[in-house]
Amino acid sequence: MAKRDDRSNNVERLQSMVEHTEENIREAEETLENDSLTREDRQAVKAKNNRRGQSIEAFKNEIAEEKGDREQGRIE
Image: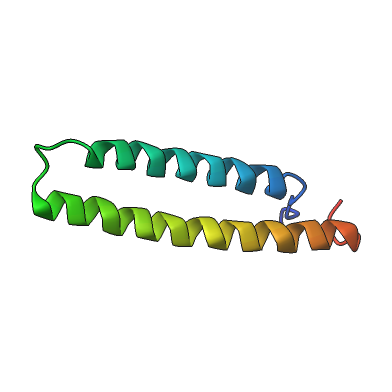
């Protein structure tokens, strides 16, 4: 028998992922203040932060969907 999909803590898990990713962005921004970084390293950090920002938006969209599912009674 297949294991039941437990989505009861998805909102909390996704929110934790948002917070963790935001912290990574802050730390990367601090790294950019280091004058010893090469131009390529700076570009790499900025590109990664851009991807992190996109991930945060995706997480937030998924949070909204999960909250909607909870309100509709589709998740216990």
